[in-house]
Image (tube, rainbow, N blue to C red; front, side, top):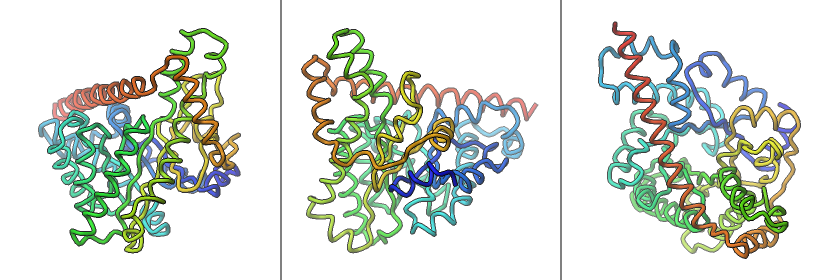
Length: 367
């Protein structure tokens, strides 16, 4: 293991890779990252599968085997095969960590982001299709996704809640999680291996807020550039700590083996070249954290990251940042609402590309 990735892990951060493809699995690349860079899980999303399935070649054998099936079926078979194979690679990690890590996430169709009933239905279908205890089903934290999170957990299914940008929505997610675990308990499910993370997006907040700060142009605004995203995430961690310390339902559930829904930092690749390429890792280190990062960020961390604890004691400073943004007329709720809507739209666009590329593959291999 590299010193920096080991130090990050020792500080309580689970390093997950934000990428998956057939090539990565079959080449041994994923196994190498597990062995050498402390990677203990994987997340996928429609954009990741769009990149993977646009490659000509790696999926041709399975497409040939499937024949002229409809494109929705083909995509489901290709993506769940990759996730199933990745969960098998991580099975040892899962067992060693009592299924805290070793998780591989697959997302429901992003076109269902505002459809509670069909999100619930597809979450069950994906869970059964992958058929591995260390899988996680990703559900977006839209208003319509919140009840689907509870309903899915209540069935004993592990959930990765994605596209969280605001503290208000994150609190709803935490409540939905605890209620879901309470229902799972009432339904007779073993709570020990039900896993969940809340994927709180980071760098996109700076991209949006920095643009507004640049438009302001004042010295006060300039001094706040690059600070909003980390402050927002640190306050999310404070909320995580408070929720599990104060919710009266949690002690009894934890006594039965329930595990906390961990905060997961997503969108941790640095977009602004003026900032450190480890910024959204090194500035967000604390116990019970997952950081899912693209390989470029992982390599930067391994090469020159810090990995020392960096959240404890920062809450007042973080609140001050948010207060100063408000004083400058920046409505963080307006920013995060737009980021959520844009995130859903972006994933839908990626999914449309997945369908088009897969249809082209079906046509190609079947003459």
